[in-house]
Image (tube, rainbow, N blue to C red):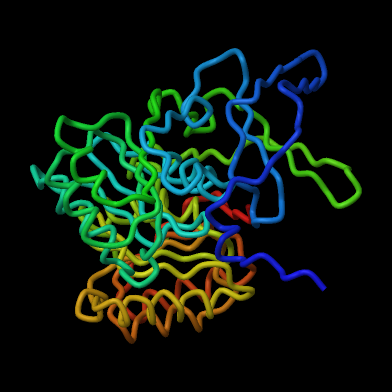
Length: 358
């Protein structure tokens, strides 16, 4: 029996692929031609060959990604997906914003408060869950400065993606051999709201080659005025800002997902659970375990789906959460709203669901 190759070695070696240089997809009267942008190190796992394609026409962000530093053999499929989801998140903010991605989910995210330096925005995003941030891809919607670049090198980061980097950043990035440094343009061209072009369509390929087409996941929530208050207590202006911030993050969390936030930063993310109350428990546990236990009181929570029972509300009340955004639509909405009123929690409905199953 031949000696098996070390799986550790496979992680850093590019897998050969022989996929075509271009592919063509026809949907009704629309024909889209894709060119191979790059061969990937591998797909989701080291035994899966993969290639990354981008359309030859139209504005590009992720599809025109530039590798300024390749790290250990270039990008894997998960790296590209982390870049993509980080750009989806930070594109919603006009001020500098940071998303720390791990396995296509944000382990933390933050947006600038006032004239806060970028390095502090990054620290707040990273420190939401510093344990999960180990080996992350960090996405920015603004130019990275040398102070932030130096801070990025103080923990293990697999990749950084931003529109640009100031002079002096690469001196810090070059201190670590395996980090990938990426540049993307056109973040402002990413569709975010439902009144913008519903393109590209999402394509999901099934086990037998069948496909599902669906419109992309966009939101109708452009400002706090689009949130509908359903409780006796109205959210404060800061709570409303944090609720909208939390909703934009929650849109990019695997369902069932909830996001705890305070002052434009996540403090706990509960993701990928089969029931909502466990997602809530996970977010609270993450917040406490990440050193944010004292910040839960006065925080807000976003939920990607409705609350079927009042149990989650009563649990959040025990920790002092003061405002919640959720889609609404449960047959028990009245009971859930009553639980909020009994605990002086403000609740707003988004009137839209944002499930993501990737």
